[in-house]
Length: 316
Image (spheres, one colour):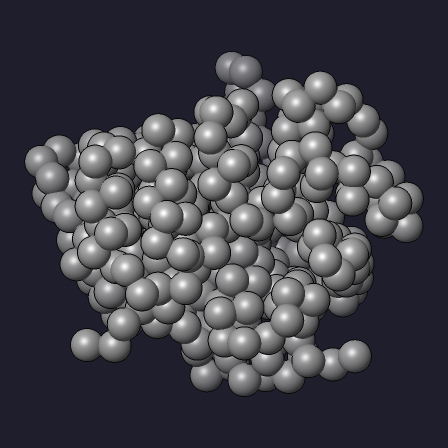
């Protein structure tokens, strides 16, 4: 079997999505005009995106012994992921209840289920067995002590460690020190900077952010990517400086999972040998394409399109 180049630790869910004119307020019932059931979970999303971008990807997670658990396994197996470390445990699988408004905005409630049963020891052992991979990716949808254990083991084994700080919560000591690339949206970056004692305004034009992000990187102790939604993304590397990539103009249908598509493509393109600046450009284009289709994993560009995004990434 081919050795994975990317290891992803995280949740795997079944997404239950209702499309509504607007999200219900307290005590309000809103009639939906559409419904879908698909695969999600931030970890699984990022693993699928990286695989469709052309990488060999191993996924570390948990699934329940219910029908959702079988759906999760079948779907990820069909994507070609290495699933030796997607362990079945007794109980319910993770799921997410999602409202998508006509504007494309979304609200999400996640039940971790089986995903919450993974331990720091499990994470260390799984990562250690995948030595030889070049990149490790995780998020904050699960327990942070598990994420920290995975990051530390991966870092000790020479992997480039990528942390997506979604959904945001204050970071445990040691997380930043074991992170090479930290990827956050504007809200998450605001929280990180405030936590670090550097309260600052993030909702600024990209040209203003360009001058601020070097200081943020120095404060947080890692290279940074700031995703800016429909504007694009801003990256900073301590050796090569800051780069902003504007997103193409598109009509958003559903933004669920777009950030995960970005992360998966960014890591995959770097893993394939492109520069981080090229990977940033390709990831912006992939995420922009994903918001034009409903769903999370179902909206991601298929593997047959990987070369097209490599070409877009390499454009000057």
